[in-house]
Length: 262
Image (cartoon, rainbow, N blue to C red; front, side, top):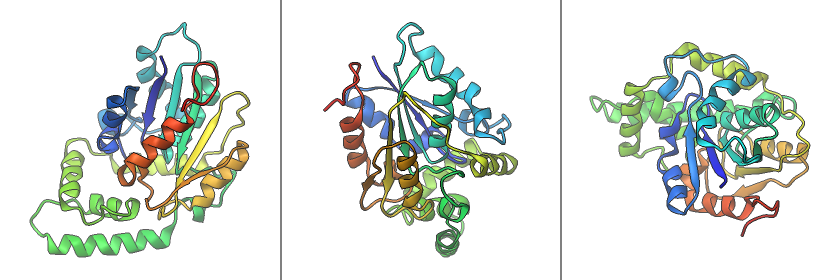
């Protein structure tokens, strides 16, 4: 049976899928979620300064859940930095990985930095988060989490309940600032590797404020496929458009026989 492995991005962890993994499980898929070193369950570890440096740790979380004799049984689904990690894993373990799904990801050898990390929308997100924080003094809301949602979501930037929940998670397992910087360095350096035998699906959000959709289009061109653009959603595509993303994944999953399952 195929195992779907889900990887989150910069300074995020498995909890930030916000129920999307459970949605896939409920539809009958076998799903595991992993954390990158420095995030979530691995918050006490140091984050490597190269994407390749994450591979051993991530694969050690995957290996216990798969049959070592089954061959290509893993589908990697990576959001943003998680997509970069998925590409690195594919180059390290080409005989175990059936397919990659890249969500709003990018690479330094394909797109300029100012498209990969858009600063003007970030400044706007910071200003909106500060205004929101000032109206909620004493509420315990994290300014960082408010800013993250303003930046990455088209709909949930003012969702006080969600911000409060993510603020609580931040208090429980906080990514250290030094690890956040290390992860940024790793992302900035990442170059998409050539892949000859692993199908790549590239999905991007039309209204992504963090990564320009042209970054995904460049990845799609590099891997000789077409980018699938989902409308009306932001960078955190599984949060903004879970139904559309689930349908897209189902439509583009490579079955055991090598054909798309419908």
